[in-house]
Image (tube, rainbow, N blue to C red; front, side, top):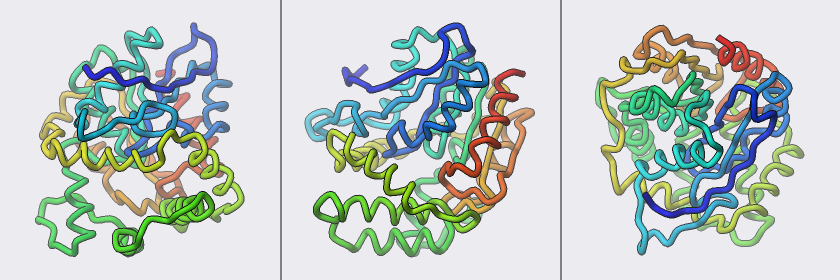
Length: 292
């Protein structure tokens, strides 16, 4: 197991039911909003969030000298649990973090008290390949997952052909533009709040460009996800999707269909982010789910 130092923090009493928050690819743990974490803590949960390697305040890696794969990123979840003394926990996961949570629920069911997956795709569905084919304008196989929304494809096609922004202000402006896209069109977008968040994300990163290593990790092991295993998930599972999901529309129903007794919840107005308007709805659902 690679020796990478991970940043994490926890809230609540050590005797409370533990929730481990697993954020998506290239994303810092502080993208789990403080207010949302506070609601979970006030509901009697011990809540832990962390930065993936190559994000935020966790170690950045020289990928050429120490390459890694998404299997290593998955194993970092175990390292965080072990560091906090958790034999098991409720896993609450967002986007690609949901793939990690699903994989762990299959691989080590004894470590997962419950599973909540938000804005994710079914393990083994190849969502990364679906997104890449959409960006390249290539046809999708008949059995592939639904494509991202057209505005997502247009945004990232432009991003791929544009030089990266230089300087703090330009970088933060670009991060806000990306957040606006991921926010979706179902709820008002608070640009002032987005700027405060992205300034925080920018300024606490050891190396903002290091997040690109997550793409290299995915390319290093394209067959990382096991296929046809979700029926093995034993943990009580809640699958959540926003009604205005721009990245993985309709993927949550496919997860819920494959996991025994999983429950599907659609949150009106939500896109692929966690804005204040949905914090109470999400926290109430997760508190009820983790109390079952």
